[in-house]
Structure formats: C-alpha cells, structure tokens
Length: 321
Image 1 (cartoon, one colour):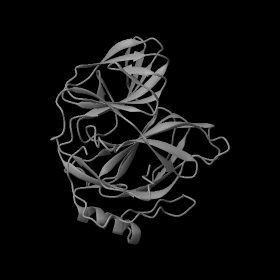
Image 2: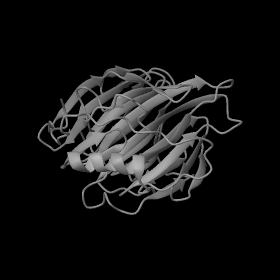
Image 3: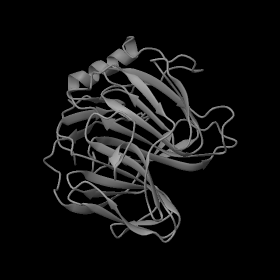
C-alpha cells in the first residue's frame, strides 16, 4: 500500500537512544488519510510522538467499510525501497500486482508479504466484483542495512500457524509467538500477530522482555495491560514485559506488533526508506524518469507520481519527536 499523501513529510526514525527499557502505556491517536477514491485509513505510525516499534515503521488501519457500491481500494502503481509491506485483511479482498510479475488476490487471514529491497513497484485494488466489506491493516517494516538492497520479491502464505489459550487464538503473521513461527521471511527479530479474544476472556500472553511492543485494536473492546482500547487506536507498550495482560469486554481482535528496537537511524519519506537525503532524492528521480522500479503489468491506469521532496535536507535522527 502506498502513502498517497501529496504533502509527504520526512519521518526521522531509528536508533535506540529513545527506547525506555521498561513497560509504558502510551496511547497513540490516529491521523485520518484518504487512500484512493473511496477508502480512508487511520494512520498510527509514523505518529507525531512515536516513529517506530521494533522494525515496524508504518501502520494503517482501515474499515470496516461498506464498499458494495464503491470501487473500494484503488492504489495505482507506486514505488518502494528499503522495506517490507504486510497486507492483512479481516474482511474483503485485495488484488496485488508488482514489477516482479507477481499477481495475487489476498483474502482474510492470508499473508501478502512484499520485500522491496533495492526497488520494486506495485498496485493494490479491490477486484471487480468484490465483497461488500473491506477491513484490514497495512504495515511496513524497515530493512536493516545488510539486507536493504536484496532482490525484490513477493511471498504469499495462505495458511499461518496459531498459538492458542482458553478464549484466545493468535495467528502469527511474522516472527514467533508462544512457540508458533510464521513462514514469512524476516530480516530483524520481530513479531506480528493477529489476536482474537472471546467475550469475557481474561488472560496473559507470553512476550519477549527485550522486544518493544504495540497493540493495534482491530475490532471490539479490549483492555491491554489495563488500558481500554477501541478499534483504530494503538497502545505503545515499551519493553521489559514477560507477559501481556489482555481482557476482552466483547468479542474482539487486535494486532500485536513488536521486535528488538531498531538500531539504525533511517529516513522515511513518501514510500521510500533510506539512510541519507541523497538516497531519497535519487529514488524519487528514478521513479519519475527511469526504469529502476520496473513495470506493473495488467493495471488499468497510470502510475502514481511522487510529490516534491522538501527543500530542506532530510536527516536521519531519532525514533521519537
């Protein structure tokens, strides 16, 4: 999924200097952003106060939207560098096409994982015809310097492992949780899991004390470490826990995102993750004038033009503002 903001601003992220080595409870408010013709997303990362959670650098939550009479998601071909994208649905379908030749319809609880590496372009759209409702999350992880120029590729995993407890089912999207490991490729120690809770569940989920975590509420009402969390909001949890208390006030679901604090400082602007001002500007120039990002075949429409890069130099700094 693209960042379609025409007034794109740099997100200066990374480094471990602002990671508190103890549990915190920091509620993050979303920013509403239009995506395509009929979809609005709630953007939780990057946030004014919080830029990263482990290697996770971008989190959008959207829906549930009734798109029966709408085109639904329509994101034209656009570029990425230095990151992975995770497409995750609770309802609906998204048709993915990319410049490696991958064409895949992604359905609820299936993992679409795209590694941009040095350069890739892709499009995302609701098929025609499409299901009535669209509900999901789009997430990015930053690639470490040792892997950020790998060959671009796309993975699809229709079946993912689960960790279970009374009243709880956790589908492991990436990484490992409570002994269950996703088949998706990762490049830093991290985890992403979709946690479903039955009404009245009161439990504790094992977590890694060296990871920092955040919980994104997808549906229903949960209390995460005692904090009420409603759909479309995210709670940053910090580090230092061995277990995470969860209580469901209704049938509910949330995404647990975590990982070792990302050691490198990065610059994220528009749909690029890099390390320097020059690198970001070159990526934009290559998208607008060259063939570095390849061609997305089969999409009926033009490519998405990049916004103008800010006149001031983009600098890699800390992970919070």
